[in-house]
Image (tube, rainbow, N blue to C red; front, side, top):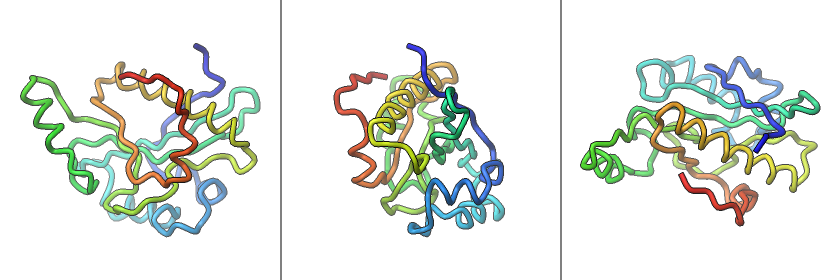
Length: 173
């Protein structure tokens, strides 16, 4: 299945820029503000050697060449700072001679507060958002398989955003 989107990654929020980030995420959630996430990077709370390797995802519409969505994304080599406590999963993987880390995580590091986790183009309609999320699922699945990630985790996603994920999509990883 061919996607209507291209997927690319950046290693710093500064590669996205404050204007674009604010346009897609707004400023109502203090933990999703550009300045907060930028400070996590500048203070070395996230990045090389922290277990929170920055790998933010930019989803571009192939037809218009405009950014359709932005998603904070981290490659994790441990489960510290997530407040999900998936240690049992890591142990189960180990008992079966499988590697649980690295994994991919969409969240705000160190903050167990719900909120928006995907910044959509403000002009995007509901149906287009759902189609994008279906393409995103396919992309994440391929990334997991190709790069040996155990899983992708979307943490503390708002109830409103949860309703956008396709309910009829049979996704097995």
